[in-house]
Image (cartoon, rainbow, N blue to C red):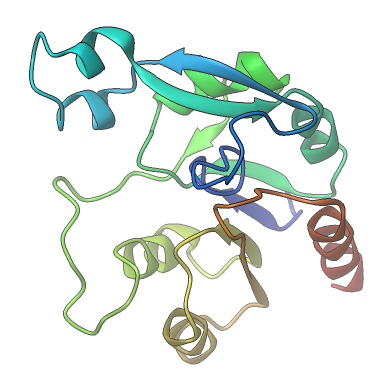
Length: 177
């Protein structure tokens, strides 16, 4: 553990722009991966199950994320598989810490993202930037009310993933602490 703020990073949306309008995005390479969280929702033996999930990743993102003044942590339903399936494809270390989610994830009774309450507990009062496609104003308000340390919630539209302005905002926020 370091004194740097946490960078709580989701896979789908920020790194994998799964809702992109075009199948080929500049800088991105398509991969067929088989994350457990996705496989459990596929019919065994089906074509989708055999082929795997199409994941678009930008290999330059790893170096850009590693160059930010954060301790990067996977905050994704991919869990430990983010280290084995995503990290080597974008150049991140394969031993990043992983937020442990309740199993199975449950809908939040207050309408928050299912990750919000467990993430606040996991962060244990440390400053963090949370990069995810599922964030809402309700999550931001909850974090502001229930987390005493500084926090940045950065919603990344799943149509385009992380962009230059997002990296700049992450750097600026961390340096302002």
